[in-house]
Amino acid sequence: MTIQILPQLSKFKSTTIPLPSSKSESNRVLVIDALTAGDNQISNLAEARDTQTMIRLLESNPPVYDVLDAGTTMRFLTAYATIANQNKVMTGTARMCERPIGILVDALRSLGAEIHYMNKEGYPPLAIHGFKGQKTKHIKVRGDVSSQYVSALLMIAPMLPQGLELELEGKVGSRTYIEMTLELMAQFGITYTWVDNIIVVSPQSYQPTSFSVESDWSGASYWFSLLACAEEGELFLRGLKENSLQGDSKIVEIMDSLGVKSEFSSEGIRLTKQPVKGLKSWDFTHCPDLAQTVAVTCSILGQKTEFTGLESLRIKETDRILALQQELAKFNAQLVEGANEVFTLIPSVEIPAEVQIHTYDDHRMAMAFMPLMTKTKVVIEDPEVVNKSYPSFWKHVALLK
Image 1 (tube, rainbow, N blue to C red):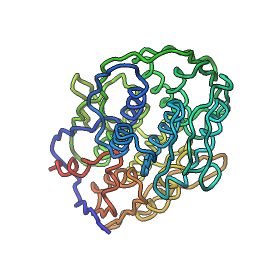
Image 2 (cartoon, rainbow, N blue to C red; image 1 turned 60 degrees about the vertical axis):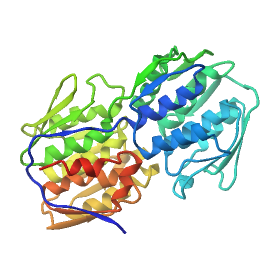
Image 3 (cartoon, rainbow, N blue to C red; image 1 turned 120 degrees about the horizontal axis):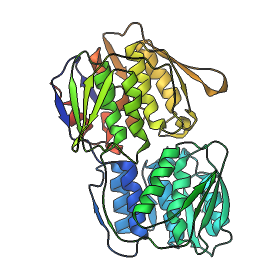
Image 4 (tube, rainbow, N blue to C red; image 1 turned 30 degrees about the vertical axis):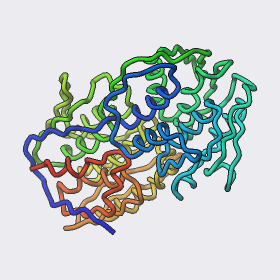
C-alpha cells in the first residue's frame, strides 16, 4: 500500500493553484461532440482519468467499453452506444459493477433499445444490441437517484426520431448537473423547454462550434477548505468563472460562512481569510460532491451543522456516508444519522497528533481530508486515487510553502 504523508502546515504564503479542467463539463462535451455532424473545436479537456477513458473509448471504438471506475462514462456511453445503434458490452471495475444502472436501462428499453444484463439484473456488465426504432417519446424517470441517468437521456434526445418528453418523478436531485447538461447542449445549437417536471427536446441536430472547458469547481472546493482551516494564507485559483455552469460553484456561498472571502477576476478567483460567520445547515441535494469537503471543514472548525440531501452518496465510488463516518471518527468528529435523512455533524474537540485516512478507492475521500494538515500530521492511504478526477492534486499541494 502506498501512502502520502502530509506534514502539518497551519500557515502558508500566497499561492496560485492551476486548477484542472472540469470532468463534468468535459465528459458531457465529449458525448455531444460524438453526436455532432461536423467538426467541433474542443479545448481544455480534463486530465482526469474518467475523461481520458472517455476519449480513448470514443476514439478506438472497441467492442467492449471498459469504463474502469468512471460512473459518468458508464452512464453516458450506455446511452450513446444505444442511439448510435452499436453492439457493445459495457463493463468496468468490480465496484462499478455494483453501482446500479437499472433506471437508465429501463428508460432506454422503453424508448426502443435492446439491452440485456450479463450478470446481475440492474447492474453492469450489460450488452447493448442497438436501437430498434422509437416506441414512445414520453418516459418517466425518478429524479432522486442519479442526475447522470437524466443527463445521459437528454444528450441523446435530439437524435431520437420523435424527440423526448422526459418527466422527472419525485424530488429532483443534483438539479444543477441537469441544468449544466442542457446549457451545454444549447451551446451546440439545441433548443429545449423545462416546465415544472417535464423536459422536452424535439428532434434536431447538434451544430458544430468551439468550446473551452472551464476549470473544475469540485477540485476547487478542497482549496477553499484548506484556507478555511488554516491560521493564515491566501490562494488564487486559476480558470474559474463567476457565472459557472457547475453546481459545485456553491462552494463560494458555503465557504463565505466558514471564513473564506472570494473575489473574482478575469483570470480566476482570489481567496482570503475572513471571520467565520457560522454554518448551521446545508442541503447538498444539488451539490452532493461537496459533502465530504464541507464535513471535514466543519469538523475542524468546530461547526455543529445539519446536513441534508445526502441520499445519492451511498451509490458513489464507495458508500460515502459510511466512509465519512469511519474517517471522521479518527479525529473525534461524528456524522450522526437522524430521522428523515437529516445528518448532524458533530465537530472534533481534540485532534490526535497523527491521523491516517483510508480512501476506499474514492478520489474525494483522499482530497477532502487533505485540509487536516493544517492541524496535524496526515497520512493518506492510496493517494493515487486522485487520478480519477485530479491527477495533479498532490503536485499542487506541494506548491504550498
